Length: 453
Image 1 (cartoon, one colour):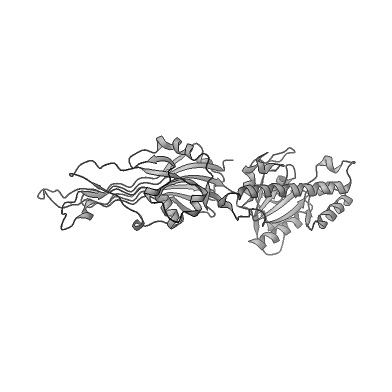
Image 2: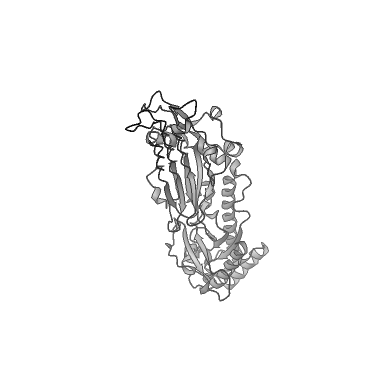
């Protein structure tokens, strides 16, 4: 499953304003008639409910919208550059590693969800000695690396003379970006991405890189003192960003448990999902989603359905990256509630050397270890300044279920209930094989999700 990609996004530059003069059969020395350049195309992310991964971005790093076209004679305005619209799955977060000055200015002044108008952009002029002369090249646009301290504390865009010294690449108006792609990627390799937005709805659009504005043609600069202006404007640079896309599941309930606890079995019997199931660890190596429809379990009114996510099995040390580690702990963050799925292995159930009390304690130890891994992941994720104050798991509602109840004796079930009651934790028993207890579990999930939605 491809759920994390790094991209370079380039909006189109605005088109050049034109320097030209009216020349017709009977008018050999007419006044200025250079038109304005067209707007550059923007790079837009759009939520698409039919997508489940970021695989469409595999093998490609650079995405560019079209530049605006130059202004024409007779005050003709240049054509607009085409927008580049990129579809992404619901739940895709957008984080920034580096950006150019214009991108920084928009994010700082109005935010990434709003657009700057032309009044907020400084247009740079160019001057010719005569009509028809080649337009002088201008200084290139620069990438500035983002650090968390910059991101949180900069009150406004850097003035050009105070821009940070570290630059990941130079991209000019007439300079192709492809040769510096690797240079840019190398420069941001060790940076921590800073999340700025998340796609949460089908059809939601976010203009991640706004296209540049067209420059004004020389007709805009005529005056009583300057009847033949040889000046016009460059189009403003389109925004450029190095970003990270990360797909996080947006589910109501996240199923969390160690390998072979029966999460996939539970998902398969209460929803129409068909996860891979077998009796060995890490059968689930990708998160699976399923929809629990309550018409099958309840006659009462309320939520008609909820979305369950089968998060791949954890092991001790997952928060350190062991096993499937960080790549799947991330998916729990966006779930409304967590359902811990515990179960004794059959060897433990039928081990005559273990008392019922010891077996109950094994289940409770599973729960404490799962919570420990989630807590450790939360601490690591919030240790940076940008994550300070966030609580990824501490405030989440959780339920505890115990699978394979068909294998447990009445005495063992009583011992388990006794231990968890003493810990003030309600447990729900079920069997993924016989389906006993599923109706009670579904009703409890419905109640808890309704309370937090």
